[in-house]
Image 1 (cartoon, rainbow, N blue to C red):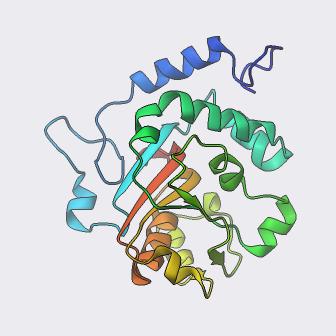
Image 2 (image 1 turned 90 degrees about the horizontal axis):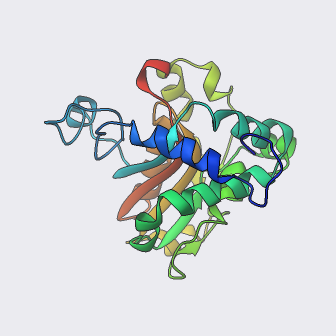
Amino acid sequence: MVCENPQAKIVCHACRKRIAINRSRIGPSCAVCALPIKPHQSICTQCEEERPAFDRVVYLDLYQEPLRHPLHLLKYQKRLACASGFALLWNTFHQNALKSCDADVLIPVPLSQAKLAARGFNQAWEIAKQLDLPNSVKRAPNLVVCQRANAAQTSLSRANRTASMQERFILKADAVTVIKNRHILIVDDVLTTGSTIHYLAKTLKQSGAKRVTAWTMFRTPPWRA
């Protein structure tokens, strides 16, 4: 899905090596939101001043090539095989996180009904359902509803993204019993400002969730947000 050369795996060894090199160049990051920090810091200034509703972010790579193009193929050209590729890469590079995962419930970031109807699938769920998680993690793709369509997040400023998230997520009637006092794992494709997972985590915690961790394929560097 990266170099588009024929091979046995969806991501060849040469491309995996290239991705591994990209990952090795990533410096220290905030223990909460995963933004770059200075070596002497543990969390960024932004999280020190105003802690987000989620507790931790883990990501695969920065929002850059060679993986940005395959994500666009998945989302906009319906190349569903790319979801298998992203799951393969996560299972390869985050084996320790998978083995030590103590989450109780996995929830993909939901799409609005209009976007889901237009796209035909939720890319976050297509990736999430293929992650090598412990059997103890309950996968629950339909607990949360995105109740209205907004402008594409990529077209909005940071302030407008934050405003567009207000009261966007609602839980289904039986969701509270599933998430109460539980550690919830959110899976998404791209984290930019963090407003989406902040408000989703806020909704979950207001309904009794004990802890919320976010796994995202990409973290957009702050200079591109």
